[in-house]
Length: 279
Length: 305
Ligand SMILES: Nc1ncnc2c1ncn2[C@@H]1O[C@H](COP(=O)(O)OP(=O)(O)OP(=O)(O)O)[C@@H](O)[C@H]1O
Ligand SMILES: [Mg+2]
Image (cartoon, rainbow over all chains, first blue to last red; front, side, top):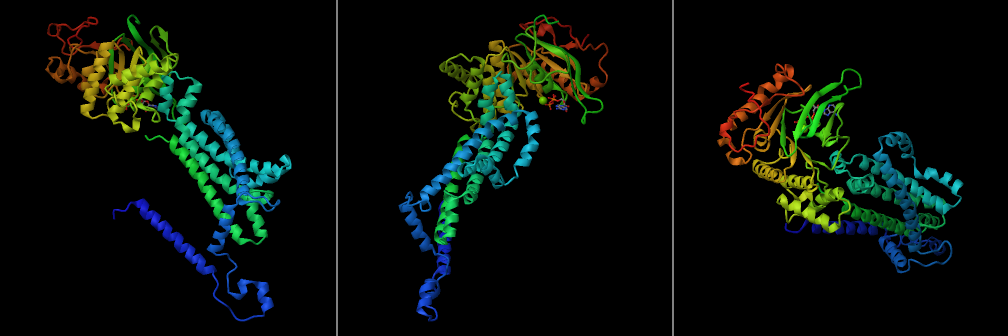
């Protein structure tokens, strides 16, 4: 009973993982030799037919593939055969590019909208219309105007990261406590000092929430965008391996996409913790 | 009228438009006149909603009167100023800054050219003044309510304002902490000759701290019904106020005002009531019983008048 909650949760997590892997293994492993058949036919069909093996790869196959990728993540053996690390690198760079551009626009823009009730009202209808548009709907327009598939993907990331950050920043700024603003007013604090030393810290937790939502959406969207534009990136890798019918690689990629997404989210959660203040 | 007054409220009104924009606007108060002398401690008493905070916010420059002006130090005010520090009812500390950071923020706003060392020194001095030395690095969330309120006081005093404006600064505190802070506030104001305007709901607090007590009738349409001169000697101690012969007459006068006259005087002001010169009263004062009381100016005893 003295074991801490963390330890018990960790034990349970490992238990669930082991159960899942065991079920996966049992479901995909062979059921032993099946009815005798023509050896030529058996050769053609492989183990799926002769050993009753499932077409789905088992955990051991995926582990082996993953190990292979991890051992040599950055090889290049032709346009369609590059390491998983390089594909991931392409995706992360695109997300970083589009996301940082969006931060540069959304945070100052949200600040202005939040500080000015006029701008807030004037821009509200536009934001309300733009926000629900699937970022992928912008893709043809982006390809047509930018004429570069890589940059179009970055633009799509930019567009989808923009709205949560813009809206959260504007909301956080507009909802800065009146009493804190009154403190600044009675101390005759200048506009810039007020923006950076009162409003920004007050709105920072809300802004960071928006940034965290945005990075999550950006990472969701990059996979789909790269499936569309092709060439490089983890999304393209998934699509390419599907065309190769390499389900093992697809599952490996899914796992890696999840892990990278988690790392991005946790990184921003760290930053959010730094700017959150207890009241 | 403004002679000797550091603050002169001249015929101010505050109206709020009726909800929906149409119809008659609500007048919280109108034609309100009041002067505060340099170095004086003035308390305002009145029922909830009569407009005390509104008056204080206008004095602070956070709110603007619908009519009339407020003259401070010979100049009509238009907006907040570092000369008028506010102690907010809700302490209003910036929670992401430490105690030191909160006070230093005010000091730096007051004297932007000071060196960092000098700013830190000034902040430390005032944190120590309110008895919080050693807590400089703490965040507001780590402080008790009374300690937060003291940081608010240190912040207001650290900019060495000409006028201190306090909105029920001690009302959220337990009786013991409130007493200690009242003692500190009184000591600091006496030592530095601080001009102070304070709102309170606590009659004993007003009796202990104030040189003059402004009585406001109920709202809407609140008026300054009268101004009570405190007959207690200036070197009074909180614990033996009640020994003074004028204490009970004064206390009863204030209670009676809050219980009945705050309502009746709104509906029908006393005969000859002049908004510019509300009657000044000095309950229970017998000049021969209060030796050493510095007479600010001679006022006839309104109760016998
Ligand atoms: N924005 C507003 N719109 C309309 N009426 C308002 C507004 N703000 C305040 N009032 C009214 O002004 C009156 C005075 O408010 P104020 O806050 O000055 O009261 P107060 O005397 O400080 O009361 P309390 O002792 O409860 O703090 C109240 O009746 C309130 O309803
Ligand atoms: Mg009030």
